Image 1 (cartoon, rainbow, N blue to C red):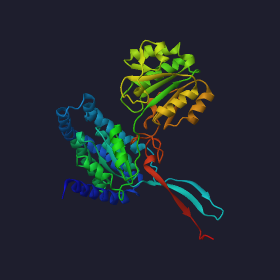
Image 2: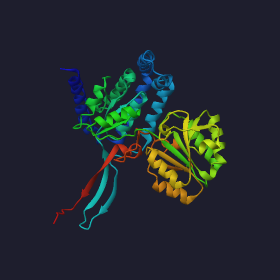
Image 3: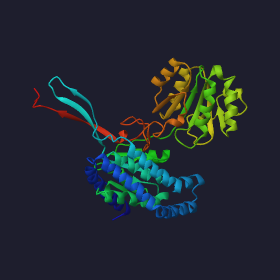
Image 4: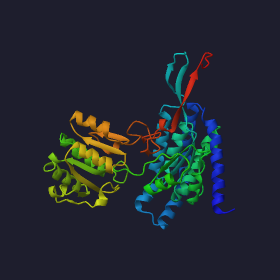
Length: 422
């Protein structure tokens, strides 16, 4: 058997076991699901030293392979990270269980009662990079929603992820639930990803989480529906009716707090009426925060801190302390720019004009549209979802941060009293 065929066999068997396990998960009570999550939290504490020992193997290999300090930091399972994983488990436990909820129950003219019930999707395939804490976070959300999950983390975290898989499976076994409800792919070769993407008979949804290259590979090679976002090119438009005392801290927070994440600010649009007064002020503030600025021909005349933008700068996700600045003639030009260069992730307007804000919300196409607030709020925890498994900029079937409800679907339920169709 050649290597590709071997991968296919292993992954096919994992997928079939996950599908079988999903049937028993679908009707678990909320109490039982919360008991599983509580067990995971307890075992994480009990095995912290052993988990960190496995994590050390990944860190040592990462250093040998030249991983950056930032990547190594994301890879490390420190005491603080493990505690945050525990906190996340308790957070998910406290969230309402959406499964079994029946809504929109209406009586038809023939007296049929028709409603819709939330049910699990079935089997989720999760493909992600670097952060091993995603293993626990994703599994918790899937278990709470009655979904089986197959997790394929990056090769740089293989020892950590397998240790965490053992925690999850032992927690399931202790509660008497099929441990195949959570599985971690033990194969580091990329061929395992391709095999996973071929299991359309068993896996219902693929969620990739990582860099644009990974997500494009998954989208182009999957035979299973994929929820994805390629990148986060987020903008703020400072309207002519903006409160500039609000604008500066919003812009600085959006760009500087964590520049390497998908909801960080990449493009700043400023109404021409503010170009001569506010643009030099915000350029000074960004410069003091260590931000490199490139801009349009008008912007560079307003501040010597702004350098001419190359054509390739527009619409770029810098993931760094760099920003594009453009002076626009109107709100319509700002919206046209966002339509051309945005990535349907997060867009924000700063204005005190109700009509301008309403128009921006109604006409800008993004998974989150904000008024007078930082783009950094497009996050499941910040938006009240408790936590998230990722952010989708597709629209079928989720748009924006994906929490518990986004890991479910709805089926029709019909109550009759003997009706037959004419």
